[in-house]
Image (tube, rainbow, N blue to C red; front, side, top):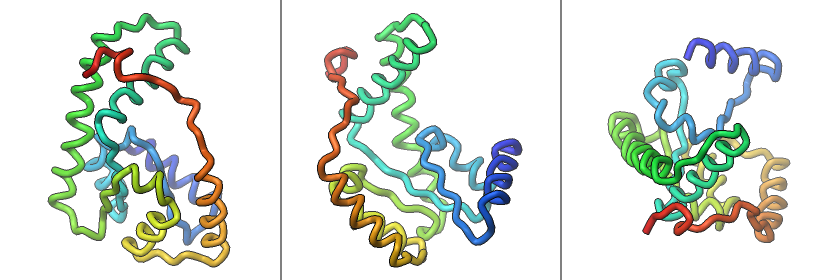
Length: 164
């Protein structure tokens, strides 16, 4: 965490004071307590996606990484390990947040974010007491319209991983 903290400090030094650093990383989910210690004023947005969509998506990503690095993929083993990780992904944040003030975190349904990004981002800003500039509001409106036509190229099926 020392190294990660130093990286963030350097980033903020370069881009100026008075900014809020946002890190969108599902890899941080199992590190919430450590992040809170390293960054005491940190706040968290935790999105939850239905497991029947999240788990195959994660497996598809892992398989892609295995192929990139020319590693053999054992689907049954990868599936078993991913299911164990999913238990942690879904339970750990709720456990940690149960001891935190409600203004330090926000739980969001991933589908709501995808379906109404502008509305959800407004809610995030309101929840954390952040101000939306007029310029950023306009960018949100524009991006909200663009998001309506987005189609992911990440295609996978639950059955290819032996999950029912």
